[in-house]
Length: 154
Ligand SMILES: Cc1ncc(COP(=O)(O)O)c(C=O)c1O
Image (tube, rainbow, N blue to C red; front, side, top):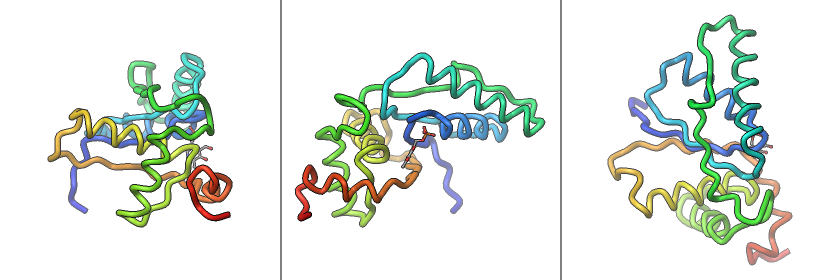
């Protein structure tokens, strides 16, 4: 698409995704900043796990690149009361994306990431000229389990 993203937002749960993205970014000297948004607690063990998985992956691939804890950025501010418990920002993100983009986020992972991205935009952390990639990792069927909290007919 000939765009140069400056940031990539993604959900950080048990951290396999984080490990793969971090290793891939290292191997390819990615110009974008990886912005993980945590959907559950468990630091610092979770970062240690991501580093271990990434470096095990590097060994399997025969890649010289190595990931260190300093490479891992995970914003912990959008977890809310806990894993799979929707926050007001998460519910807002689901409605906003559905109404304006026709994109369905899930309340457990992707909507918490989008809540973080929206908040980062609102507080001016991201320049309007930047290209931001949002990695939609799925989870849409979970929407049906949260119909009541989303104000949808069951
Ligand atoms: C929809 C969705 N997005 C993101 C994740 C997070 O991935 P990871 O556990 O690799 O951090 C999961 C994990 O189950 C998921 O189901």
